[in-house]
Image (cartoon, rainbow, N blue to C red):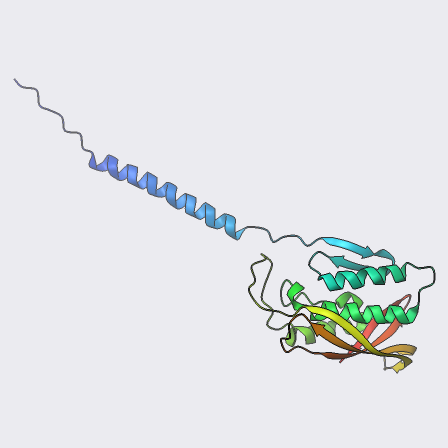
Length: 210
């Protein structure tokens, strides 16, 4: 009696093998996509500080802002600072930081807020978000392609001392400063600005920007 040959059914084995390979491929794809989505945005480092005034400079700030910050630090660390020079440098760095939108990580990252009077800051930030910063795209992952302004220089055209009074504040020796803003490339942003700087303890702060 002849022995019957056993037939090995390969169909189910092939299917299981293919399912296994397919599962591995799906796992690898999801792992790759997951790693891309969970990449942490780069932490922004502070590179310079004026501790007694609580001013800071971070690595995203432009070369011009960095240069003015160094001058401001030198002036404020003198035994006897020249207050009008302080007002001039503060105006320059504030406007450069505010209008260099290229340094902002997104529309909520408003430049120059550390130089703004605390009672005016919320109003200032809200207006900035609704106007100048409204269309700034996110750049947390350093992949923004949007063309944004970079301030190359701020010229102080006029600076004078006189009283400034509101229902919440009075400063008999406030600084009224008129500036011209220069950009690396003209993109239609504000060229002239008028500031009012008021005294707050040992600091000068921006109370008005027009």
